[in-house]
Image (cartoon, rainbow, N blue to C red; front, side, top):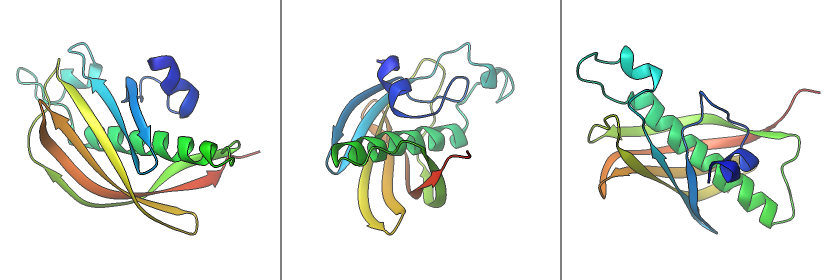
Length: 146
């Protein structure tokens, strides 16, 4: 449910690219997003042949990572109040297919390792069971301004 997403991460429309949290495990999370035909970016991203921008697919992965990280820290008793999960590294992003208006994607992130305040993860976006994006990335929790 969207309310669960809003209660977990600080992102808000129009820059929220997760509709639902399906599962959070000790080693990762699975979320979904349906890209609606009326979303404003489609008007300018290949008019007549709209394609979801790859950077927004990447952002959906980063937001799923924020869901995972927030829930993991909460389960360990370290609720991240006053902390914001921010992206600090992107590596090996590979686009393997297109996402069109009306498509629903499954976004999966898996924890690789944590070094100090940096949390390294992998991400995959799937449409109809096939990977359309894979990447590696890192998030850090930073203090919110006072």
